[in-house]
Length: 604
Ligand SMILES: Cc1cc2nc3c(=O)[nH]c(=O)nc-3n(C[C@H](O)[C@H](O)[C@H](O)COP(=O)(O)OP(=O)(O)OC[C@H]3O[C@@H](n4cnc5c(N)ncnc54)[C@H](O)[C@@H]3O)c2cc1C
Image: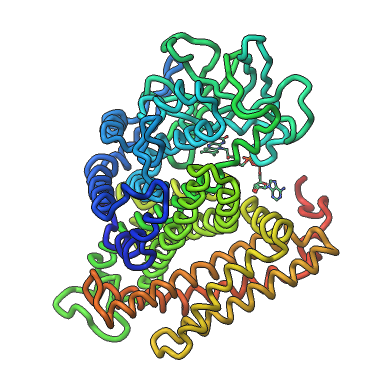
């Protein structure tokens, strides 16, 4: 099975040489402490924790899974000890305010931490990950009293959190939420309803679990405008161990992420407390959605990276036939898999997605830092500006990177041949674990609608594409005469023009035919993902070329490999964008014409 090794050289390349995080941190109100030494210490210490403690529980966690007995969920062996080590290191509060027990460091450092944990053991990382969702919500919308009562233990990591949105009848369409909240006259509410698929709904890692629950007040307006948000702890503060109506109905049996407890949660008149204004629950819940979705986008690169870490040594070790260009290892019975073009195709795809996706997320993480600066400086204009900038990235990162992460996790399994299908090697687990990433936190289809329908057409009339594609044009015009970068520059110029053309054409058709938004959205999302990743590969190639000429922190071979991977991406992967562009522009007729009753003549 893959042995996780934190890709610290690639992380440093992006942090120091591509995106200059040192200068970026100097612009942040909470960036003073994020010195290069501190960043190095965080990367080094987190890498150790992940490699030595968290990663070794990946396969055993999958085999053992979670257990529900007498209403209590137990996590797999070793999880509690690993979690305690994580908490003792103060990791949970890394990017949360000092006044509530955190370390107050920039959000992007929290994302680095999450990346390593996510790759080492995605299921494990979900427990602290879900807590972050609850912490962010309370930090932004909670009263001071709520922050003291809940945010402090959550930041310490002694309590954990969940996000309870989904109900049996609805996951995407939250306007259908039925859970009820009845005011008790003392400032509290009785919460009654069932939530399903709740990650980390219950477990033995912490003494308490704080649920953030969407529910309806009596006489609330129908649909999304009548939903409020409540804090419903498993145990009320000061009453640990006393049941007040929060229970686990069952544990879901799942395809993957088996070490993550996915619970049916029953609230039977449980005591809850309103957080944020009445009927504004969805707005409050979605405030931090952009950053939450960066966390899920991370799952795409996590599985790409881990699967690559498994496939690469196998492809070097396993022998099969001879390379077409002649024997590469004449003293061996056959040449290694890595000498075959088709195996290289799969490995390079994995590498391109892991490293290209990492670059996309690190760049967006700087936007997230700027957004948080707005909150820290009480400058809502700044907050909204950066939230909206980030808003263009999130559906692309979440939608595209999780789809591609899943695809290349599968490629890693393919490199193993039949052995990839056998549990022992750990490659099939990565595929099973990756599968959920395109489903939760908004399915790929919903990300696509969000991107095309909301962000591109409704909110900005194509401006967000025009703005971002300027970066492609700038790179293109600047590097068109450079013999090494010209191929990247030229293609970026073409992509920038095509992306804008695509947007305008869809906008014109959609004005007359609303179905166009839904029928074109997936292809538009994938096109946008390929286009955006092309820019970030070109950027890395540009830095690599510069470091080759002027010297950098890494040896020349590192930068040559970057240039080679960029070339592979542009020549072998980017052409897929064309197919998506062509499909996105087709009239809606071919998708919409078939009558519902004609989808099958053999069954309903
Ligand atoms: C392992 C796991 C963990 C989860 N963790 C949590 C959690 O912690 N908290 C929580 O609240 N929820 C959680 N969920 C729920 C998850 O977020 C939902 O399953 C997801 O949002 C999809 O909702 P749904 O299952 O109801 O699908 P539906 O909403 O029924 O969607 C079904 C299909 O229809 C498509 N679709 C729906 N509406 C439209 C539309 N208007 N246009 C185009 N296509 C559409 C969707 O893209 C999807 O392909 C989890 C789910 C799983 C499986």
